[in-house]
Image (tube, rainbow, N blue to C red):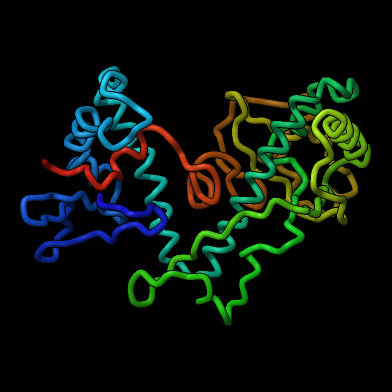
Length: 318
């Protein structure tokens, strides 16, 4: 697609008022996806050709792979990887059309949710050190959606002043600006436990964190005031929808938040997981897994593998 950066995606093109998918430059044809159309509309127009090109030439522009490795992939599997990449970049393109303040808020939410996921994974690996948390009623406490919120003490791009929102932005066309990459904070962080959590749960998690610190060093965060926030709509964990049991929610908080006293937010007492449909959301409606916010690779580790191969400038007829 002749991209020099995936942070600023090329605009769709049209010919005689109709969507076009290939930009012709002399003898070269350069792919230009239609980000505002569905994947199905794009796939019909170019995915078979691009998948075949990746299979035959991908090793020429991606040194992480070889012709032998690509030979093992089916065209169907390559097409599926392209589909995943397309949807991630489509989200990024759509977000780039929103005001800078909204872009900043989305990036901030993505980073917060990334910290929640990392914290949940680390705590889960040390759960065994606190036998009192071995019971299934505590399973939810080791999933991302129920972690305390860690806010950067140094500030975040979400704090952009709307009056100066042009600062740090790249103009890609008249009236459209893309927020430039801002290095994610490494701390310190102020952590805020959710007020819906039982009083006895936080000291147990503190004990887990203390055991982590003994092995890995103390985390770069300190305790802030508890934060009142709604129960999260969580996503599945290992095929199960892991909701907090009702008896693990602070009863005083629940009495004051009737809007959260619903089965979609809590499991019945003694039931910690079921097979209901995944809500695909996390705290405050933000996703905590792949596809959240601006999609994979946003403000963090870039996705690697065949999903990105079709973005190489040399993906064109030779």
